[in-house]
Image 1 (cartoon, rainbow, N blue to C red):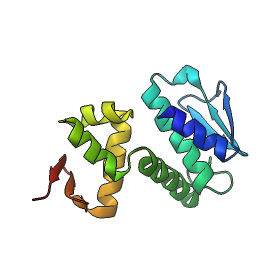
Image 2 (cartoon, rainbow, N blue to C red; image 1 turned 90 degrees about the vertical axis):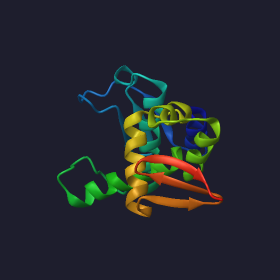
Image 3 (cartoon, one colour; image 1 turned 60 degrees about the vertical axis):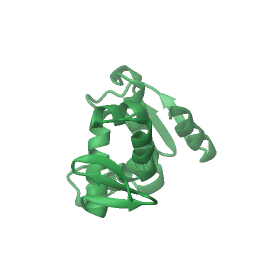
Amino acid sequence: MIKNLLDHIEKKNIAFVEHKIPVKDVKGLYFDETIILDQSQIETEAEMACILAEEIGHYETSVGNILDQDSLKNIKQEKMARRWAHKKLIPLEKFIDCFKYGCHNPYEVAEHIGVTSEFLEETVNTYMQIYGRYVVVDDYIIYFDPLGVMRRL
């Protein structure tokens, strides 16, 4: 997963730097065509993938400095970047792949995809906002609450 994200960064000519960020709980930043990740605050490869995808999402969707999260405009851009990351790391077809693989609960789904449980939960909430409680994809019904997949008859 991380390799695919790094390939995406390379294709877009985005600089990637690993550097300590002197702000507590800020693990990644996108600024001036550069993604900065603070590896000292990132605990797992899954967490790194989620943060990296969100920072790429800022490249793809954000305009200007959005660090001031008191601004409604900036909050909307933050949400757009997160939605981009959700769709990039967990497209709807991934839920079907997890079903076919034999995943039975959200923890197994997150583990199989390579994302954090929190990121999976955010993604499910994003899809619920877009589609409602379920969506039909090909021969499958993906349920978001509770999370599950069924093959259509």
